[in-house]
Length: 431
Image (cartoon, rainbow, N blue to C red):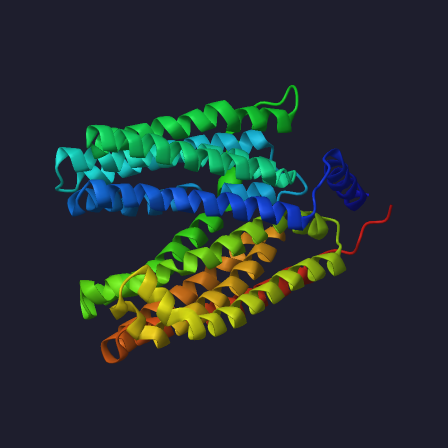
């Protein structure tokens, strides 16, 4: 009886919206992410060309301090909400918790800045970037609602609006006033405009009449916090996993070698754009399949994602071998193309990581968030240990091999975790 009720609720929600094909959703998301990434690169390019290294450093420092804080406080509530096929929590619970978490994030960034010995301008930049992250996180919460009902074209439009307004407001302000503080203020205002002028409007339309954005229910908020906390830990560890080699390379090899490694690693972002777009396009559908006990459908969609990850791994290795040297030389300088073998190993690591991420989307769809915590923790420890051992001996190749080893641990662990999650799935409910 209970299972039938769950099935009825999930099916009624799925029927309430006309779900597009995964291919259509994927095209929207990859287009949105690609455009946004180009706009972010444009902001950095503006600072580098019209400013100086100090200004670029201030901006990078602000992002380095604020981003990890919000990586944790966001608790990946968007992923939790998008996969909440049974509607265990209302949107008001997710949005209220995100508002409180965003305020906590801003206060945390401000507290950290209070202990740092920087100038007034640098401190203001860091705090303002924290405010911009808080505004972005509120829009991200609404994106979770739109993703749940598979209105991903609206999520992509929001991302593109945020990117276009940010590069315009940020770039023009900096070029006219030559002030990074003023430019970041313009960034805050542009993202606020997207939140107020588009995100809230689309969110209200998706909720329907009579539904609220905010509801302070302490017991429910506490339960949601406990439920989603593992996702916050996972996202923080993923961020550390990507940055640990950089911390250690500075120590062992110096800033020049780190610059080469980081430039190569930036090439992986294009690959991950495809992974994120496809994974987010499939997340809500996978969650409904799991909630309905549709094992065959769940395995079929997850299997397609994994095979796409395998294709990314193979193509990445082949293309980086054939085209890596001229590509690195054109994008950077000739000395970057000399470490072709390092680049190939990094691309292979990126392909393996893509498979691990796709498996992670399946685990999230099964709502077994805690299963990923020990997996990513073990992967992070492996990455740190391998980098510490191999980098002093093999240089950049040691760091690349450490990334590949950590990615393999991530894939193997997530595969076991997803197998366990599928063992918890119930049979399809009788109609």
